[in-house]
Length: 158
Image (cartoon, rainbow, N blue to C red; front, side, top):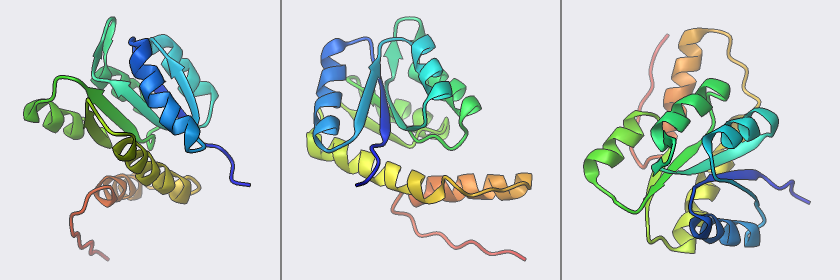
């Protein structure tokens, strides 16, 4: 039996947390929800979180700041930002800040599950890689981010 992956959902909105948790739980994920940054960071420190789904904006902290703090704890953690008020500049900013994906509401369960599946399957494949050299770590991070897109990339070097 496949071990359940922990998906952390961070939103002030209880209805949003439920809308995200229900399809994830039905698909076999362990959906863990919280409504504030402090609790989210504590869960990231104490649990093996496979993916974070977070509102872009909520009281006390923006999703981009939580992304930054979460990545300081777990550098390779896939992070999806979700928003009701989509705009191209916000999406570009989120991706440049390191978000793995950006979902707008309303969303379909299918889109949510496809996104989570894509990002968590990658996390399983790379979680045991050990890289000591900073340049190798940077290259692995770049490869991880590019792998999540449909872009064609050639990596060369000596």
